[in-house]
Image (tube, rainbow, N blue to C red; front, side, top):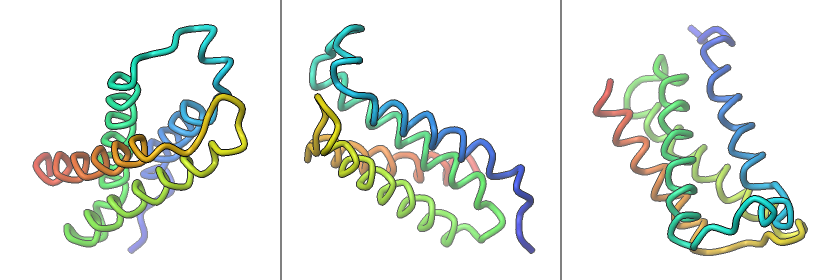
Length: 117
């Protein structure tokens, strides 16, 4: 049985938050502040940790292993797509460190989701 659409609303809202955070042009961010690399990396880690966790929650009816795999893969691919999406944006760009932190956050998120379920 398919889950009702309302179970996916938190995931969709979080995906929107992540997209806005990662696709905001660089000059707009520099008006606020330019964080050190480790803070930016930690932000990527937390964004995708939460992404994987909310994905897992919305996929709970899929079975444990399937939900874990789908939530990790979806968060990881979404993170990669957003990194590539930054290429044409002024002050942004594809960064391997950010991509790795996205993946690490997704991995931590699925472990946290597994422990909390």
